[in-house]
Amino acid sequence: MSFDLKRVLKVMLFASNGPLSVKDIQTAISRFHEQALGLPLQGEDAPAAEVPTDGSVAVPSEIIDPGEALPALVEDDEYYRDVPSLITTAQIREAVEVISLELQATESEIILVEGHHGWRLVTHPRFARWVRLLRNEPPPVRLSATALETMAVLAYRQPVTRGDIEDIRGVTVNSLIIKQLEDRGWVEVIGHRETVGRPALLATTRQFLDDLGLASLDQLPSLEDAGAEALMSAHLADEASLELDLQPEDSITAEAESEPTEDKPNE
Image (cartoon, rainbow, N blue to C red; front, side, top):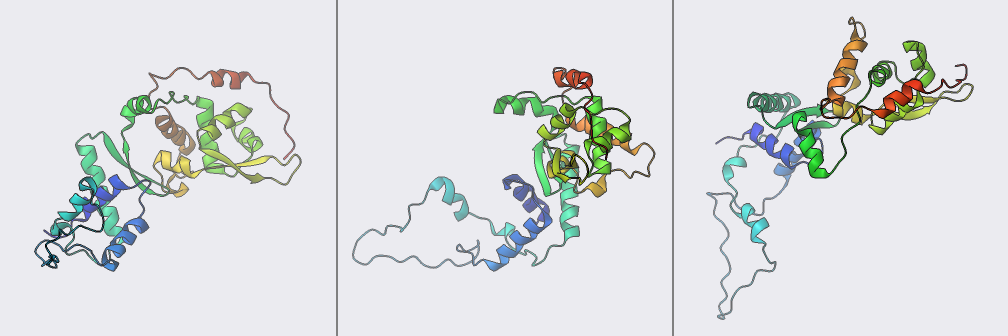
């Protein structure tokens, strides 16, 4: 059997502790060719073991844990033969696309998502509640329509201040809305505008890209498209509200809408 890139990538994705990038995959392939394998592949002659001549019993220098070391002793050469010295980005992306389509076709509980740092295998959103129960995590806070619209404006116009967002939306943006987005890990302060009051400059985070399955901000719908920000808000709602029928109403939303308007410096 020749080298099967798709199967190798599925194993790498499963075993990876974080997102898997093209560079990670190519580095692993390079390591394969650089390493001198300590164990012979099937079909190759293994070095003869030394047999004591004094009647003693040979004891290995290291104690082997059968649960860990044994699988390595029975490696099949079919997975390690004919490994290309170079695998291109196009080949990797093609194999990843096939994996993703196969998971979708079987309605798997696992899906493949691409974020800023690479690809990840994650549980399907419809099973999110079971994951939270396993981890003993509270239900996520549902984002209000105001928060989603604010997030969409911020994503397209960043870096922006709270005052900028208010000017664009034409309504006051409560500080609790910004805090909600920061707590979710989607927004962060990247600096301050050098003007009266030095208001904070807000921008999206890498977590925002990962959660929406985007490799970069370039993958956002073009602002030239009609209703791009509305489309973005809808997409955010899909990502942020995986269990709308199971989540309690967000108490912060009501408080945020009723908070008195804060005076803001002229920008």
